[in-house]
Length: 116
Image (cartoon, rainbow, N blue to C red; front, side, top):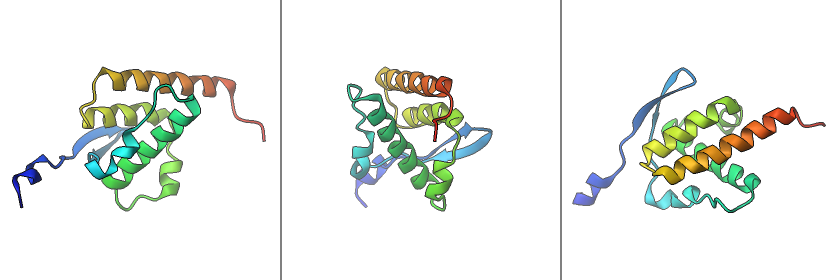
């Protein structure tokens, strides 16, 4: 192996929802899931955030299913996003994105369940 192998990301353990999760960082070939346009409509930002969380969780917990990820309660989204930002050593810009997402989640929660 070349010396570039030393640049591969190392997993970190985060406590989320009372459980220890070893999250593994994304690789260069997965960079597209990090592109969250803060000028895009909030709905699109939420979709991209979901893709990001899903990709990190699938890389970190290989035997997880889409159904398990889809059933994670929104109450854990903030912790997941903060862990992902720390894992990838993002700057304050990442914190601003998290705050926007938190505000959008709170707004949806205050409206109550969607009518069917």
